[in-house]
Length: 264
Length: 272
Image (cartoon, helix red, strand yellow):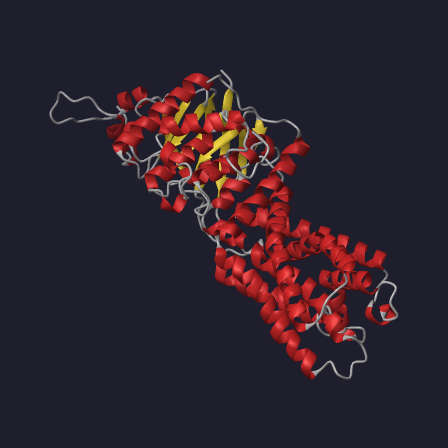
């Protein structure tokens, strides 16, 4: 399989900081893979995603997305990726649909028209279809500032998927979502992966969301602690369950690695 | 319903023009959604033209030997375009604060298309102010012939592009709204006095002359006055440069400011 994300010895040191936030990390993600990038707050996850999506410059190292260098061929990289940022990046004064329309036009999906009714039928159909799946069809024409945090998150998901990216970066996508919304979101993302073969790069603090991924990398203090499949991770960890009938979960393995526990 | 597919257009020219149009339309939409900003665009001319201009006319214009009212109206029209475009460009700082900048910068389009779209969006509010200035002028008894007014209106987008590009140099680097508002004053106030919007600068010398020649508004004003005074006996005393020189200077300064401003804008978001 082709590697769609290639990271070699990536270093990022912010201006005025004494130590690098990302300290020589290397990993690869294959096409169509579901990849989780886990770590505690401040470990370097968002910094890495920002570099991979061309919104932050690296200090050194090599990063390629779909074979394109993130610095030298940033435009080609941007064509390939979609992202849900950790912080909401919606215009609070526009309606939900106007935010989607803005995105669709910037990605060349359709020519700009001043109202939804004037937009091409394919656009209108796609927006309504996505809104129905995510469950925000009733809020499409309301201003963002009047929507709940969960609704806004769902809208960002629609927006990031409307141009059908090859690689989807999800930076803590379910933060602030209720259980029902989380489930419907994951069902939709799974469906998108199946339908389009989208590679998904996920960071999350809900470790259970990473149970079904193909590969997990744990980053701590800017360095990769381990890269393996969830099953491999669970096998290599020292686990002392109470009661003894329990099997280690990915969360158990994650905490063990962060605490510097020894692998079996 | 039949299945319709939404596919990406591959034409680079279409994508860039569409981006500029989309960004511009967003800023115009936001202006209509914020009646306060629209009212501000109409009130500003009352302060600038009505109060400052009116005071100058009553107390200073008597012994000048030319029609100060007409001179000032052209100056205020161009000054208002520059001032309002600069003020409206601070919405970039709002975009930074709401993280909407990230959404724009992660899209596969030229940064120039984004910045030009922002400037053209800001131009709309500036044109509203221009209309306000004309209304205040009419109330004060100062008018321009219809044909000449249309020519100035035709040049307004160029003037706004020039003013917006200059504002980008500072606003592209700024991350707080408070600092951005101060920067706008820093950009617009010296220009109003040094470029000859309300005070003739034909006799300026030394540092003041050098500064005035570095400001794009000097050439915009001179071009506007060349249009208004063309064929009149006052032309030589009102216009400093040949219109070709003005047009060339505006183009060169605008392109230079646009390149520097866009570079600062893209870099300040990316290089942290």
